[in-house]
Image (tube, rainbow, N blue to C red; front, side, top):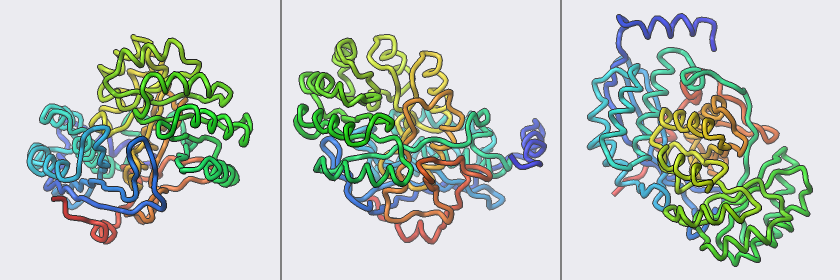
Length: 388
């Protein structure tokens, strides 16, 4: 925090402080190609479609938020996201005081059913705006940092096992020590064998986990967890459909690999439900699922109280706006035992002048006020698309 940050923040939050009035909120759809396709269960991604929200105050100060489309996770698609902001959320916050961000987050949370992505982008933009006004970082606004750097997770999703192994060795030389395998795509025995083969190739000191993105039925999930014992996976993420709560609980009882929830965990209630059922030992938290920064901070506290490991992640693939927000959350999280995944480095380009970097396998807490990145509006205009 800058030396004068605390006095500024205290002054701005006094009852008689001048409000930070939101003058306008813009929903901006963008599309940026990925460096190479990312293959997940049922999905092949070559271009990332994201929603940016630009919140401008009456004094000209601007805050930014981001959410990726997620049709198979939240159901959010670009035209609907734009409409949700323009027709429902923006009118609720325009003319309001951005310093009352908790109240605005509560209002937006109850304005629409689901629509986590649009709510997330609006909430993040308002939080960024308030942070820049107060001259404090997002992590300082939400309780203060417990850590200033975080180990980065790298996603592996090549069609061939030899390509995964080659990419893993390359990334280890760059300093990565934490990898997530995309599974639920090929026959379970083949994927389990591949996981064991990768473990043998990288040795015992590298962390490996796997994510099925709901791509398995119970039988294939059971085969995978039994056959991949020697891969020493930290966890298996969301092997079954998001609504198969009984199946997840049954699988957890017999699995030698701890299970991580993702698509199933759209709110705090389901986190509690699955933890009590013994279905999960950890939770993948995404701002687009939970509906914003404030909601994710709350969910992290609930996870800690339940004894769950926390995994924070951007959706593939968000720009440095989303990445910076997730890193700040990772720095205030009670634990990040199951990793933090940012995704801007999978894109061919970015929309900020100071992109978030991964250095020697680690991500530093962004410096500066708000989310800490400086959006280049010319770049935003370059990648802006029409959402029809």
